[in-house]
Length: 173
Image 1: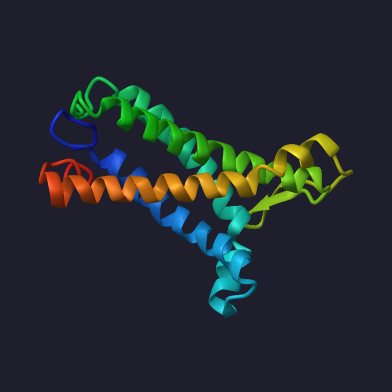
Image 2: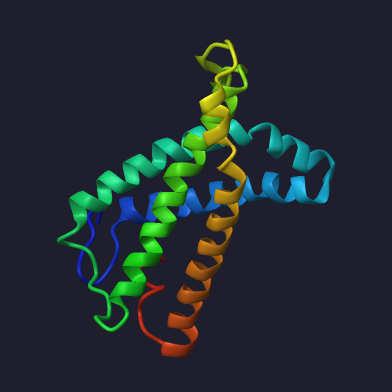
C-alpha cells in the first residue's frame, strides 16, 4: 500500500523515512570525523560526498514534508497524552533536516566556492558573500541539534517498542 492508513505508514512514507535515516547517518560520519580529526579512507570517501548527500537530503525532506501534508488525514493517530511531544519532536526533526542543508549551501556560496551535487554544477564559484557565511555558520550548531533530536527519536521508538509494547515502531517497519 502506497498511502498511509490509521494502522500503518504506507510504502512512500516508509521509503522516505528509512532512506533519509541512512543518509543522515552518513552525514554524521562527516560530523564525527571533524570531532576526531581523521578517520581513514572510508570516512574520507564518505566525507567527500557530504555536500552531495546534503543536497539530496534537502530534496527528500521537501518531498517528505509535502507527502506528510498530503497524508495528514490518513496517518496513524498518536496517543493524545503524548501528542504534544510527538508534534514537538517531529517539528524539531523536520526543521533541522530542512535548515541544515540550507545552511550548508550558504557556507559554500558565502565562501565563494560554488556548489555541485553528484558532479552536477548547481552554482558556479563566485565572490564571497558575508551574510551567507554568517548564516552558514549555524550549520554545525544545527548538526548538534539534529544529533540530539535523532537520539531522542530513536530512544522514543525503542521505548514504545520495548517498554510500552505498542505498535508505534512496527507502523514504520
